[in-house]
Image (cartoon, rainbow, N blue to C red; front, side, top):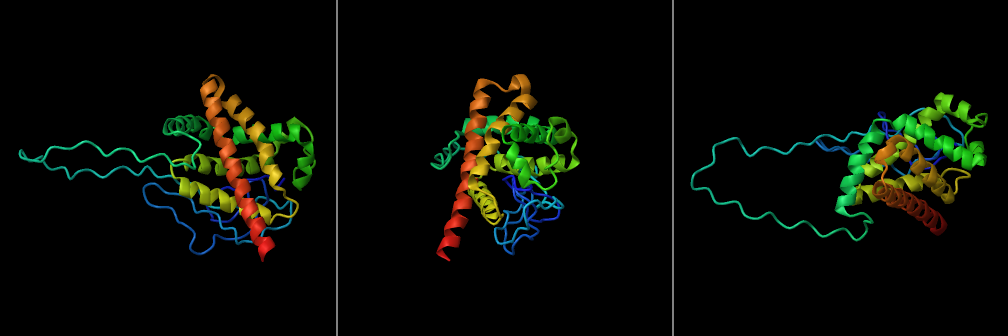
Length: 258
């Protein structure tokens, strides 16, 4: 479905929805730009107007660049003999009440996700193959996927592989932003808003990806997909999808009030 739900980022800074088709719009002026060292891809603008259902995936939003951002050194000079002793570090900030994950869980999924990031395309293809097995009618939302009625044809489709990579890159952006909840919320809310403008797209479609995503992650991780990791992935994908739905509903309310 060139209307599958979560948006992705790629090199030319063009908007594209997650489960949806190419929006064809550019990043709106004033959108956040990546910072040096620990760059964030721009939050997708919800102001662009999407094309008809089934457009091809020609370009993506902007490339995901998360820099290494090493800490600056202390200056390299020898410490003075009479330097003041270093005090205790400040206590950690209180947990964000909006966050369903603990700091330890965020650390665990960020570490686990690195294995998925090394197999982004095959994991994404497996996710969509499973999605279309469960919801074959969704194929009709994708102009170029309508003839892909078998698992074999889906696995061999270059168009499906491209779209799978787009969606997985969006998920990658969300998971890597779990330690920056303001960015996480803004990014996914705006992604959800984009989908409101897609003709025929329903917010319920976001939830169709939950089961196939977990199954694909399990297959990629193998023995590393422990009971604890599975629980963390379940919490995370639900958090991502809930946030996308919130963005869709915000756009819905704004359109009704206009």
